Image (tube, rainbow, N blue to C red; front, top):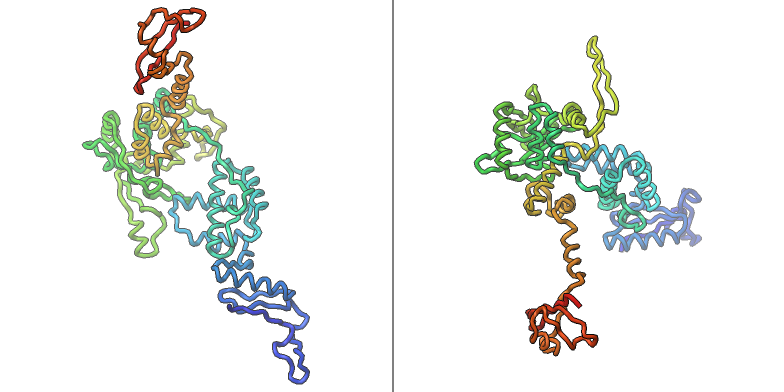
Length: 478
């Protein structure tokens, strides 16, 4: 096996006349012993020969196993590793990359960025968790923790760490989101909010409620996606915006296209909306709004034209933030669901314009219509498998985790079954060959059976043969 220790203070060969090794020009300077000659491993120096021998043995063994990690490669700070190595190698689309970058640069780097990779231990991770939970909600903290774990896993693959410290330390517990049940609106609330929206935007409520669409899917829906003959709507894209405010089309969440059944009343509302507000053509790049840099990106980002069914009064695609602030939240306020928390004052020429500021909770934003759609389907007895397909979930388990509490009778069926088991007037099973069975066969119901009880008390007895040949006896009165 390659690898040896070099004494940097003395020459390798002894003097022929004196038989002693002469001193080198480095004698007394720096670390004396240097380990060299291990393929793929940088040389390393030590103060003592024992330290050098120990490290040489470990390095040779780990190299042979393919498990060697040079501790010096882990001296790079977490920030430098992210900025110089991890982030440039990512190929996420803007819909994924933009929020991920925001979380990493706003939370991971400020808290843990100055720490070298090799110094990220259990204590550092516990401190990171405590600081993170002081900045964001547990739901967001769980997502950020996943980003950190992905970064450290890549550092292991890059041979900068021997193992991921998040997975190596049992005392380190990831943040857990507070479980909240999905909220659904009642029919009066839906109608109240819908009635307070501008006329051209009311169809957005119909799409969210009638098809279970996400907001971006509703805003990216085209006239060509409606198949009135088959009675389905094809969900094939969503309208997204990057951090620079540039719109583009991309596949729905998870890259899953789907077909959702369209009810006759929804079809009628669609026809009416198309008549009153004709769909408007909109051409946007696909997947990424950045200009392509090569032929492959040009093909991947080739613009597509869609006859959008939801547009602004100026026939433009809808910017979700403007729509939320100027249409959705005022409708919530008018319906009595939220109240203004402040006022925005701006000058427009010589005029001063004032507009209320609303802070709507997440559970009352557009996504609540999707939850309401799921609740209506489940309460009607629809299959979880079908609903999962219509919602575009990866598996029916995801649907169950989110919406099991909407299922009719959830938690009561088992309770009713157990209550039957514990019923006081249970049927007593008497073997067929038992003397008691022979005696009971000789009497009819509602007769007094004497002699079975020494006191002579009367019993009202009903019996029937069981599937196994015994008698099921129910003593009603005694």
